[in-house]
Image (cartoon, rainbow, N blue to C red; front, side):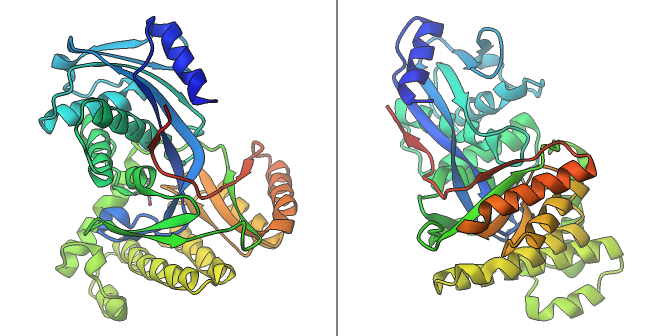
Length: 383
Ligand code: GLA
């Protein structure tokens, strides 16, 4: 889907040309799961799949939102009455961004928006962050707000937390706003400082497969919020601002001070996962891409056993990929369904994908969708 096509669809819909077309990608997280709301570390990469937004300003306080994925005409909202939390489906994400911009005092006076997205929805690949960041970048450019990439990410998170009502961390929005081609983004979610770490799979003769189990998770449901609450309880019990502050050298003694078994396991996941992120970065920076495989496997086991956010389909995908020769594999994103990633030698990619599909067929699951994640650019203006 080209920017010109998105622009033409806008013209057909609204009867005038858009002022521009912007794109923002979905993401997969290489490692660092459920660490972002613990002030910890994450390592996502942007996908080539993007949400593309054709946008024109309005001056009359009206917001019109349209998506090619949804039948019917544009959703019309009045900027004066954006508050509250009615379920607006996909439109809640761009509308939430406009709400957050205005809440922050930015003079956004209305807009016509048409969006086309190639980011699979409900697959744990941050299709909603892509919508938010494409909209935020477009409005920042058009209204001359000059927002930094990190400010765009914060606005997107605010829209999602407060307007849509999903208590997510800041990883997905930052990945969509800040990632660069050929890199993973090493983000410190407390300081909001980041570093681009080279992840040139093609040059190394490798691929990162994304395995979409097509089991749909609902982030807004209680499981994610419950994990957050357990982590906060753990931090409180240990007397630290966040689990990021638990030193891995003192993990054993910290765990000994936690009475609740569930909280203990949640804490162990977060602390060891932060360590795995650091170790993954060290290996990547040493040029040892293959050596991160075992860390991915350990990360999955920790998500499955200690954080309990995997599901049978994800475990099957990870197990089958490993047996077929993947160097490492793990669930990615919030879990409870969604996608896994598997690091494979280029020549093994087909075999691994087939083995996973076969395992799913044997188990009576829906056929998974498998594609290669090419580390791609973050949000940008296309036209
Ligand atoms: C979702 C959230 C992120 C992060 C991941 C888990 O993708 O949006 O903020 O918490 O889950 O790592």
